[in-house]
Image (cartoon, rainbow, N blue to C red; front, side, top):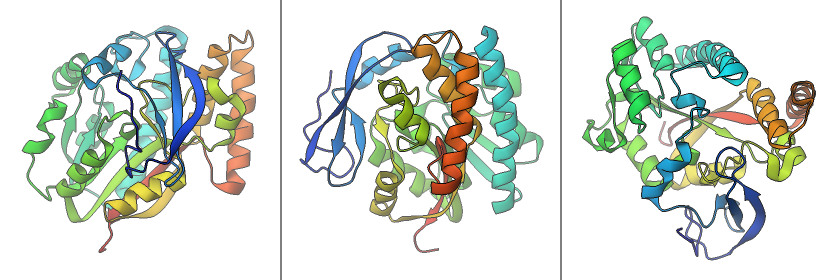
Length: 295
């Protein structure tokens, strides 16, 4: 395990333990969340060594890497994914009608394939070998390993997207530098993140599936994410909700609590979370649209 003695984003030593949590999804191992009192980042600490992180994804139930049909949750995940793909496309289409897109953490490639069908020039990054191979074979997409990010030309993409990806990346400052380097001057960086200050996060506490330790290394509140963005001389121009995430995350959380009425409870709490967020903006997941600060 790798133990941090300072904040992995701002390097402050002013950190303290916030909460003990468990990997309910896979290993049942115990982890801790620590908080930086200077930038408000919450992070998993200690965390697995970088070379050991892969084993925490080795499950047929990790659905973004799964090419099969994993029962009820698999069907639900795919239904929500189809709805979210169309919404994501419409969000980006309003920014730029067509161009070049790099989707980092593209999984099995369904989003990129949708863009490809709409005449976008598409590239993908996916560290999981099985998911990457599926995207190539099934959709004829150009998808590379994570190490290939450095091979792209500077300022070569109109859109760079990371949908629930940044929280998984071991070196978050390096990733922000890389994406900024690859983004065209008038381009947009799209980042979706779970929100640990949402109503459902507060309700489920250590059972909240959005924590997903140790796969999620960072837990960005809107304030903490704004600090990261400012550090890298980028600018948030818009915040949008992913309302369906409240229902899916609530369902996983109810299953972790072993609730026999998980579906009904998850629907009820998903509605409650979205109603609360309609007033304060703290949705279960938030899409951030960024551009260069000079724009």
